[in-house]
Amino acid sequence: MFTRRAFLQSAGAAGTATVAAFTNHAAARLAAAAPRAAGRPAADLAEDEAYWRNIQDAFTLDRTIINLNNGGCCPSPRVVHETFKRYLDLSNQAPVYHMWQILEPNIESVRRRLAVEFGCSTDEIAITRNASEALQIAQLGIELKPGDEVVTTNQDYGRMLDTWEQRVRRDGITLRKVSFPVPPPSLDVLADALLSAISPATRVLHFCHITNLTGQIFPVRRICDEARRRGVQTIVDGAHAFAQFPCTLQDLGCDYYGTSLHKWLLAPIGTGFLYVRRERIASLWPLTPAAETRAKDIRKFEEIGTHPAANHNAIAEALTFHDGIGSERKAARLRYLRNRWALRLKQQERVRIHTNLDPAHSCAIGTVQIVGVPTPKVVARLWDRWRIIATPIVHPEYEGVRVTPNVYTTLEEVDTFASAMEEIVKSGAD
Ligand SMILES: Cc1ncc(COP(=O)(O)O)c(C=O)c1O
Image (tube, rainbow, N blue to C red):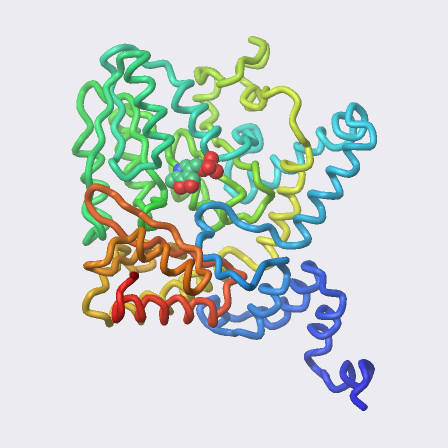
């Protein structure tokens, strides 16, 4: 009979991975995967299913559905979720003591680690509840007078555009939304679209590091350096960028950067951060007012009243999980998964890939259209027939299905999506 002991013995070199399977713990999964990764180029590891099998098992998922909307928000690995729950349980013992006295002060460790990861100083990073809050602090906190202009794109995030529109109505500023081609032939086209829109009235340039609609990456540093030279402040929407692919402040050079951590960092829902360039902190009004004595303190942006400490403290565990894989390796795997479906579907005559697949332009996210079939119908069909979750993108200039796999996505899931799309090309979505 094949006993558990015999099985463990026969596992030989794979013994560590086997033990991890029995303990079924996310941290053990990650540790088991580590030796396979040592010293190997990221592109090589991206195709090593034995390595990624350990990562896939670090999550508690519902594998009866295929979740290709990781652009919305993501499940946390088990180790992060358990940490989050442990902090909640601890808080609930006596919140005034356990949450305020024990957990809350440790937000400073999270700030320090995020600052290291992002490459900024600890006193330039505020921890927020999401990218919306982070960006709105910047959008609503900058002093602008009637007639001052903000330049953005017509593919920026809806809520962020709504925020500027409210300032148009309330403060009499003007908003200019530029268009750019999808997919753009070069990064220069993107820089030119924004920089050529700057006028003498322009005070702020607001744009995505990577768009949520097609996953287009912008040449942020080039744009920010030139804007700065012309005296224009820059707000970069990094909701999708942080922890999807390697990037630090060095690559950006912006004045303000807002991101969600419940997307690609896989932190608990309700986490994000705002970076503010040191010399801009004092002049930026917080959304939720703080005492004047804190005017130069980045923590003034965190005066939100009573809130759970569990969410933001569990960011530390998510950073540990992220670092355990490594940013380069994660990005290489995400590109590998994206290319697997995109290069296959590209062969179809009626398929348009709206994402430029060059690694300088994109990473995990891809948007694909089946010409002649309305996108909402494609998305409904994917769900009804295959239980695939994907996001319909319908923009005045183009439409398509946005597909965002994650590190836990299997090749079988990606291939099922590609086959489903081929089937819809052939037979329609009715
Ligand atoms: C480009 C972009 N900006 C901002 C946000 C807002 O993020 P959150 O909902 O986490 O605040 C999103 C959310 O999907 C986004 O895609």
